[in-house]
Length: 398
Image (cartoon, rainbow, N blue to C red):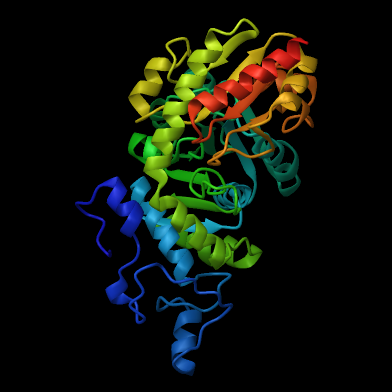
């Protein structure tokens, strides 16, 4: 399907970026081009490719036909001009930061972000002359006052990981554009099915395709989408030179994941909503954070920005740090691991795992309390998920 016009999300998820009539083999399923390099027609053809005078494949570290389908399909689903597939979600964020903050400067970021991104911004990028200032994403004045002559771009997650804060993307994008800056949004938790930040004013969207896009916990990868000009710059400079290329096999697996994305996200969302409602009524739960609950502080904003409310739930267990650890040690159906977006239900205690490396003050700033439990609700029967949580709570009390 070469044209993106006129088709619905579900159709693009199945056909976007690939037309079997244009493939020499006629394969209906997207082929896996498991190759390192490509044969040139002649010396002049090779010279034109290397001089960027003609589009074509040179080396899989730069382009690959299977990867291109993934890139075009995610871009189409997000409403972007172009996409770039990377070896991981962190590779996507790092490449974006190094491109937009070329030569050093400052990132202005929401403080409610994934622990790995926080470490990249606070520890690794400063070694390359790029500092980060973290702000409360709900304080628009903080965004405005945080911008200086050194600011290179604004960055946020919505929903934030793991606090599930919903940020007003449109408002932050307006602040960025008033200062001739770009807004980068991590849309991993929502996927393009639940929200499309570019339509709200964002300039670049990044994904950990490892999560819901892949959907089965089998592959690691990332995707960046944005303008054709910016993505071309990324591909021909930072991507080519630093080598964060995605393997064609993983690209193919992500393409399979996209084909059922809408179906899975609806089931994830429906299950998560029921689990969140159950948790709100549980005597051992202090608080629940889920964008679909009226108790969520940004409930109305979530309704405005999202199609559904997603598969992520976090809550505070009574008893604090030790109770949190005991609960995650007591589950049987839920899997204790450091991932989200799987078809299976996953659970983790961020204070003792994903955010353990942060100082007490950094945890507080990022909204990571000792009693916070993060759930990535799968597509199992929701009654079985709740039954497992119930027995784990009972063991925690004992």
